[in-house]
Every structure is written in C-alpha cells, then in structure tokens.
Length: 274
Image 1 (cartoon, one colour):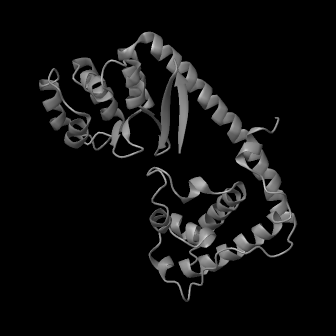
Image 2 (cartoon, rainbow, N blue to C red; image 1 turned 90 degrees about the vertical axis):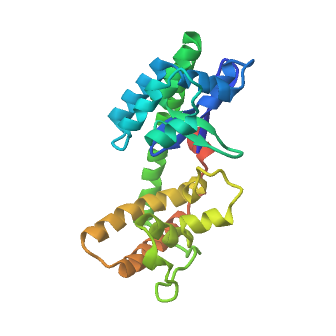
Image 3 (cartoon, rainbow, N blue to C red; image 1 turned 135 degrees about the horizontal axis):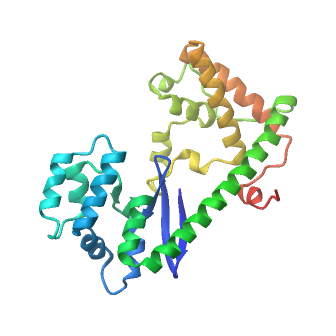
C-alpha cells in the first residue's frame, strides 16, 4: 500500500517494498516543473557522485550486486544512462522502475534523500520533516492497533457464541492446499483463495497490493493468531493436511467470538485516544 507525503505542494508517494520504504523519485522530480521527470532523474543518474553513492549503497545492502558491471557506469557516468540500464546491468535493488498506471521510479529512502539533496537542500529538509511525521503517525497507529488486537483477542479467548460463515476448505476435495506456500495456506484457510487467485479476480487493484491489504481489522487479528498457531504446529511436525483442519477450526472459533462485538474500522482505530 502507498502513503502520501506533501512537500512544498508536491504530492509524493511512499511505497512499502520488502518491509522497506521506497519514495517516488518521479513525484520528487516534479520539483523541477520545466523539465520532464524522467529527464531529471536521468540527469541525476549520470552524475559521478550519484554513481559512487549508489554503488556504495548496493555493496552494503545487496549481496547480489554486480560490481564488475557497475564499472561500466563509472566509466560512462557523464553520458545519458537510464534507470532501467542501471537496474538490469547491476542487479540493483535500491531503485526500482514500475510501468503502467501506478508506475514510476521509486528509490529506497536512503537513495531518495540523496536525490533530494541534488534537487535542493531546502526541498530535502521539508521532505525529511514530512517523512518523519509519516513514521510517527505509523508508530502511533501501530500502538493503537495493537491495543485493539489485545482487547479483541481477549474476547476470542473467553467467549464463543453464534456461528460465523467463512469460506469452507475441505482438504479431501480441494487439492490447492497441497501446492500452497505457508502464506498462501493461511490465505486459503481464512479467505478460501490464494494470493494469485485473488490477483486474477482483482486485476484493477494496484500491482503492489495483495489480498491482505484489503482485509478487515478482525480478519487481520485472526490472521495474526493463526500465523502463531501455524508456526507452533510446524515446530511439532504436524502434517499440512492436519494443520489446515486445526487452523480452520481456530478461525471459526475466533470469528464466533468476534461476531458478538461491533465491527471496527481502521479509521476508528486511528481516532482512538491513547
């Protein structure tokens, strides 16, 4: 899912990739309105200092970085090289390029701040302040969410009431579970479909989102609980087929308890006082 920053009237997307924050260089490049965003990024990339910074970042953070191929960029740093060339030749992970409606060039926050320095020290300062505000809000929301989970989990553990209908997965009839990864196994138990199946059913959704991004608060609570349960079952060498049955019983039991509580939204969580 993407968050948004507003820096000097410019809306900048922040995307979570592999649990790391990547900031849209395409949006940041709009700081120079008289130049096409792609050209602004290209001009930055051709800078010798930029190549040296990117190289160091990749060497520290990317074990698969192709150092030899990187020498090509050092030699031709002053020519017009593209982001795609940099990624393809060096196997870089600090910058990514997406195509399509939700596309653009994104960079790890470390690299994005370096780009901001090149654009304008003033712009960088405002970007840092807005990014810090975003992280503080995320931490605050996480605290509130954890408190809600604690309260609702207490209900799950102490009360069982009327049945709650969920997608039923019969291990004897549906063989999808045999090939499912552990993450998809939980998706099957909770939603009755794999991440791939959800993607095929929802082609209009942004490419960097998945079924869990559209879950309700209660679904995420139950998911968190069955993740812990599944981990314990794996440690005890319980076969996958048996684990599905145990996990499914747990899901039904949890939803029974939660069905007695008023549904809660993420917006309501954000508004809860500490």
